[in-house]
Length: 150
Image 1 (cartoon, rainbow, N blue to C red):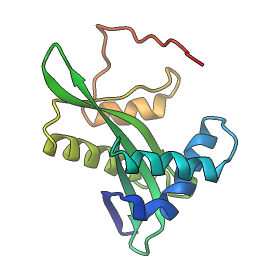
Image 2: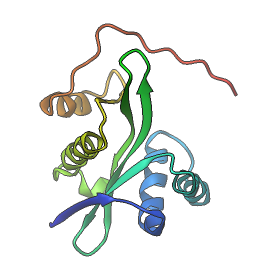
Image 3: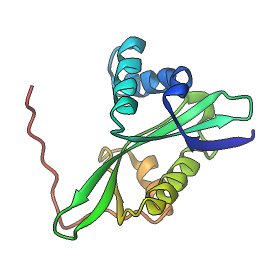
Image 4: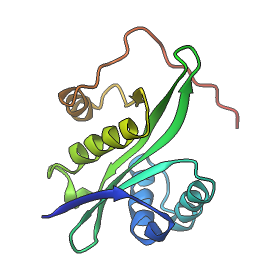
């Protein structure tokens, strides 16, 4: 397998939609390719995220990651939230997630970011082991909270 990772554009929707729909299904959402296309189209139209896509040399989509820009007011720096990371089932355990995480760090660094942030389920041990092997450290100083608005 020849793995290529590149920044996606609106022209990649046909490759991204099945991956994004699969990501949502992984988190127990019903399949809805139209919703996936609309959501991704909005991100591209408003330049609200950076999406990296991993493809085989034949162009088949293997996975993606989506980064959202944020800022730290206290530190007065740009940071990115690595909100979405997904690898298609048939491509798992082939280094795709590791390559996407590495490429995400390189892209964020090139854009002047001071940090990448992510969160994962407390019981997602395989992902935590991967993150830690790449130098990610668990934040022991802060607790995350959520207020559901709708």
